[in-house]
Length: 267
Ligand SMILES: Nc1ncnc2c1ncn2[C@@H]1O[C@H](COP(=O)(O)OP(=O)(O)OP(=O)(O)O)[C@@H](O)[C@H]1O
Image (cartoon, rainbow, N blue to C red; front, side, top):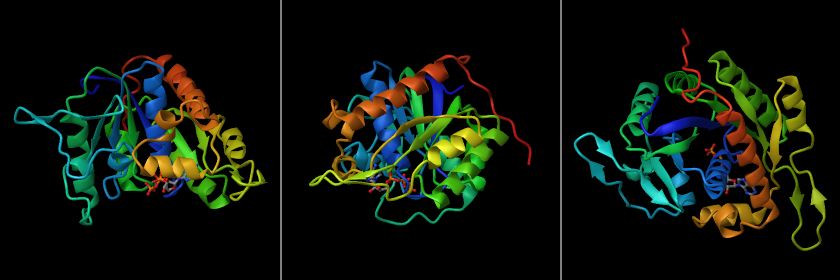
């Protein structure tokens, strides 16, 4: 158990750039809109993006609490911690795996999370050693897998599901991002990354598609501007989809015991 946190939910993707961070921030805000106390931990230590998506100004630093702890930053009513709050994000991070895992554990345990129902972890993309160690060291209640319908992304999403299964973390479901592009001018719809991929792996792994999000200019623009869709346009179809995903995640996780399975995995 992590102090101040009831449930930890990992948001992961096998492949980079499929929208994992965008989904994490909007899902966190949707859970918050449903009355839960929510935090986000950006574990994407090499390319942290939660600070920008939450609109935390560059250079803003969390307040220390005593010698060992930090208060989380606050944005749009949720608590957040990221490597980006502690280092200069313009310089590349050239850390080896063990340093990344160490930094992550410090972020997780040295933040004074304040009475959270859900802490969402924006995992680093991929399914290598770092991801495996993170999933094994943290008492995760469940994992949400983000993918596009594209074959190559699905292949990597499968690896993500397999990884969580190996460490006995329940996979809560799949979010299919960039499912369909709708032209803002003529309304024409195009399945740029293909169709049906989410359903195929959901079936294969006996899990479910929690929701499908379109490839939409507004999703990118609003997240880049630090006011993600769920807070900027709460009545839009996109925000409603995030709301539905949030409901399913909360229901599944709250149905489990409060401390969730603790992870053990031997090399
Ligand atoms: N549904 C969407 N429609 C339009 N743009 C999107 C959508 N989802 C994500 N994006 C954009 O795609 C880019 C990559 O998204 P994001 O950073 O969330 O992906 P990621 O999987 O977390 O990437 P990384 O692997 O780098 O951590 C961002 O510019 C984001 O704004």
